Image (cartoon, rainbow, N blue to C red; front, side, top):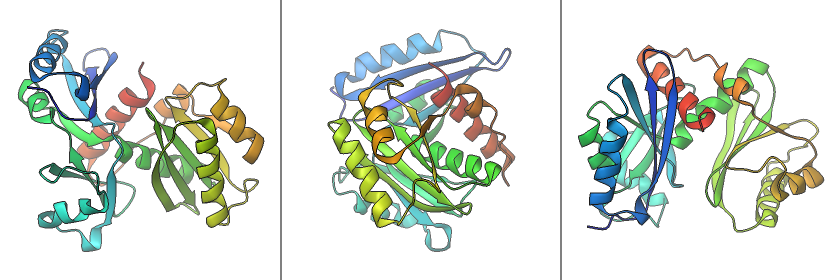
Length: 255
């Protein structure tokens, strides 16, 4: 059986020596049998690994905790009209923000959890939101964070320690990226001189995207591995905070 569209990142952390490995899976290019074989190959790397799985596809809805109801998950996801009608809907409770991140699980997640029963699944945007909020509050600075994926990027704005905007943009060229960033800055009345802009993810440090962004908005700093790894997570739910940091370290720092 051919799987539907979707991308997963399976990250493994060796509980003994903190070694990390990450495998990106393009579900649209695999059959169920091929994915099953690949997952079993990953499992044979060793039993000492704890496993996290992040949904790397765009498409998520932030819902304030005050109005969140688990029985309405599918309703929340109707904001994304390209989501399959029969999609399984999941949510992540954010640590740094009183909100839930709602998203559709791509085909293949059930197989992942069957092979790795203790696998912790999150949407990658959950990790990115937590990271941006943590870094902004630690440094006491306003900032724009750009997280680049395969053909899309997420833009997160933090001002005075509070989330102002989180949105995903698909792009086909570096001009698309520059246009969306400039449009958001204009609509949000952001002075680039008062905001620091950071970028990370699937982006060439010497490529056209960063060159063009720096031409239009000024300095854009790349988040280094040390910046990401040194982030300290302390949440009300220590286990959730640990899972969030583990996934952050694996997905954004590991190669």
